Length: 93
Image (cartoon, rainbow, N blue to C red):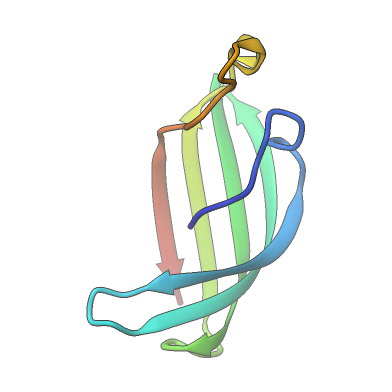
C-alpha cells in the first residue's frame, strides 16, 4: 500500500482507498480509516475497512504497520525523509 505522507501529516488519522494487487493477477480495492500511535519507540499505523471491489468483495480488511518512531530531525535535512522501513501485516476476514 503506497501512501502520500509527509513529516507534517504522518501521525494524522485519515481515510481513503487502496488497491491490493495479487500475484495471480487479480485485485482487491478497499476503503479504510487509519489511525496512528507511538508505543515503545515504534510507530504503529492501523487501517481498517472493507473490500469494495474485486477479489474478497465485502470482506473486512485490517492492515497494521510497525516501524521505528519518526526522527523529526530527518525531516529538516535537504532531501527530507524519503522512505521508512517496517513490518506490515494484512488480514482479510
